[in-house]
Image 1 (cartoon, one colour):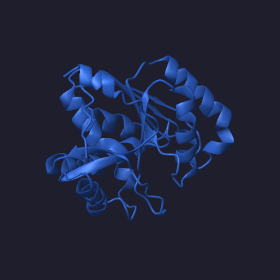
Image 2 (tube, one colour; image 1 turned 90 degrees about the horizontal axis):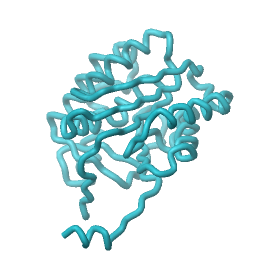
Image 3 (tube, rainbow, N blue to C red; image 1 turned 180 degrees about the vertical axis):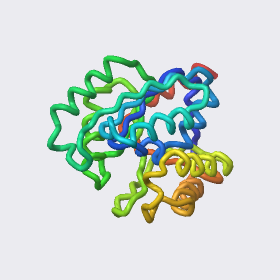
Image 4 (tube, rainbow, N blue to C red; image 1 turned 135 degrees about the vertical axis):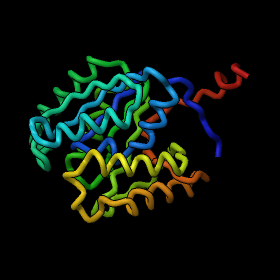
Length: 220
């Protein structure tokens, strides 16, 4: 397996349908990116949770998962489970969000997610962000919709364990869920680690990428 190295990253966009989607799907990647790129700018958009107790959870969590980064979070109050009924509103929110940032990489949910809110977001993001690398993260849950990923971010065991600790610290409203536990999160990240020969990993579905072998050869 050939490793492709992104190099320095100064600005990213992360999008979720609900508070905790981003941290569950790519918390370890956020920790890795923030520590490897001091001063990283993180633009976050979450479709639901504004004005509820979950807003405070999300703001604190993203700060913790992005140490040393400049985090700007925009939350909306689209009703949970009703995103398709708010298509126009979400489309406009994405357009406004895109105008406010110029990320090198965009992270969002993936198209084959069984949750309708996640799926709609994944379908709309590439219609706004056409010139960025877009990676779809996976969200562990009850549905049997675990994707076949194509891109991996290796994590060492300490980062994987830190992700779990931060999830439990910053999302107390979710702890009662039967899948929200250490074994679930570490089990998935260990599986993804096996698939890329690392202790742990987070995995992504690649929307589209251009690979220029001539340019790579010219830099050697």
